Amino acid sequence: MLKGRPSPRSIKAGFTLSEEEYDVISFYLKKYKISNRSRWFRETILNHVLKTMDMDYPTLFGENEMRR
Image (cartoon, rainbow, N blue to C red; front, top):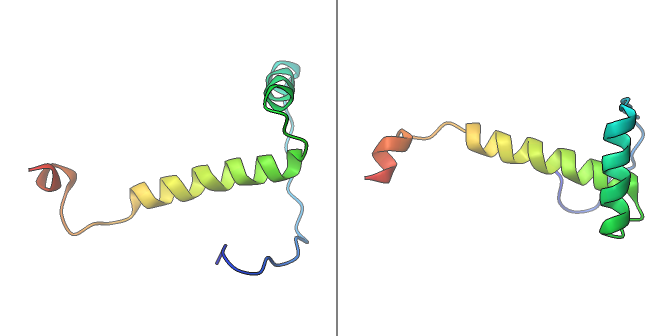
């Protein structure tokens, strides 16, 4: 779904930040020389979502059984 040829981005998503949140993000972007904020937000959010979905994926055995 997310691999291969990228599809055009036509759906907008927006959110608001407090001044403190904006300052922290701006500091981070400057420190790590990130020039494309949109791509950074998109990748950060999608990485978190995909990681959480992967952790929530049902397994055949419970976590305790797999650690034995």
